[in-house]
Image (cartoon, rainbow, N blue to C red; front, side, top):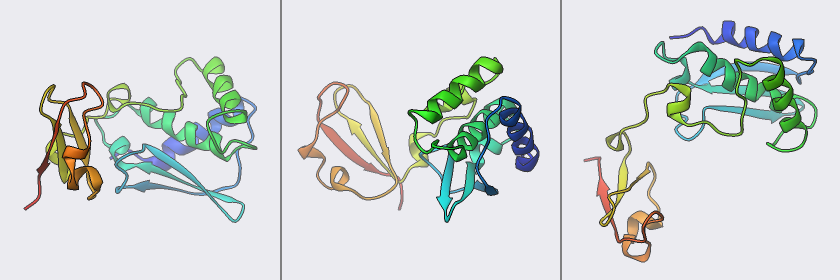
Length: 167
């Protein structure tokens, strides 16, 4: 498991050397529950809390991928940085221009970060297209799972079927 505190300090130093002033970050912690995001910057009462997915802290993931996500979240704490447009985009462009090893963007895939993608069986439910075989993963019950016949595949328009992976 990677040392999150060490990587955070390195990333914070890079942000400051680029001339960007981060907000008052009081906590950087791992998040083992996150399935749909790599990092999260929360603002509470004028201070910031950053959470990083434990999937990025696995030894098999390159340090740069983890630092890239940490910098992304630090930029949200900077003045007017809570979003992915305007000031945040300008900060990301500054980091990307100053440090070629960083690739700060709005989103990243598991493959681009070097993280092993989830297998369909890692999710509670799958909805499978009967035509093209595309698999949609779900962890919570929703209308699509309840009535797959009311929906169609976003890739090909085919009929959908629900599969439950829990007993």
